[in-house]
Amino acid sequence: MEPIQHRAGRRVVVTGAGGFVGRAVVQTLLATGHRAIGVCRTAPDVPLPGGVEAVCADLATDPLPPVLAGLRPDTIIHCAGLTHAPETGEGRAALTAANLTATVRLIEAAARLPQPVRLVVVSSAAIYAPMPEGLAATTEDHPLRPAGAYGVSKAAATLHALAQAERLDLDLAVAVPFNVTGPGQPAHLVPQVFVARLRADPSAFALSNPQSVRDWVDVRDVAAALVMLGQPQGPRGVFNVATGLGHSLQEVLDVLCRIGGWQPVVREGAAHNVAGVTRSIGSPARLVAATGWTPRVSLEDSLRDMIRTAS
Image (cartoon, rainbow, N blue to C red):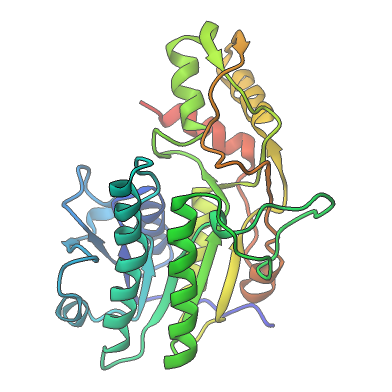
């Protein structure tokens, strides 16, 4: 598969534009000469980069065909979703509405547009089954067997997107980012959790699963991949957004301490959002072959920028 050719000047709608990944996508679009239009459920607390307009729409409940018709997108990059909810019936319902229902309705509305539109649906590595011993990296053909409610909702959205793309011949790709890190990461996710705890009291740092391994990919690299996948008539199917490298929580903690000059007293504590998964490493080979994308930000640089920009 030949790497895609970059074409600037498109009108690109970014759902969830006020979020962690969405903001980075908007910045990347602006830097590469595109017109970015943000769609947010509520008005963002902080203006979008470059003064980009933010259209307010709840993808799970609002009428979407007139919204999209008015925006006239060439591409839609669907970053909106919910990553965290209480382990209750209400929490699972919220994840289903934000991740599955919103995706179903967005694809339906996009399919009704009079002009062709490129769709990039952002999924998550939480959709995959646990990695067996001996497997170096997860490919896109790996079985789906999510361990938690978030992964279930994203797996359902992924399967729906692929089924509709096949049924309606949609110009659609699904991106599967692995553990996204970097400046602006939400406070409830690692490594941001580690940064906050180290700053608050390094002498009381709790870490119960130090050998859990993740493929940490910087949000700016993720945004670059999504923009590349957003090229009209681009590659279809599922594409991992990953580095192919695994680093344990202990390694992440060690790098943070070296950068920040912290000397924590580490004790055993509660698990850090690992959903029972010991190893999660992705193969980016399909994405690299299809687009020419490669990760450019090292884990250390990503963590350094996170510390510098964290409030």
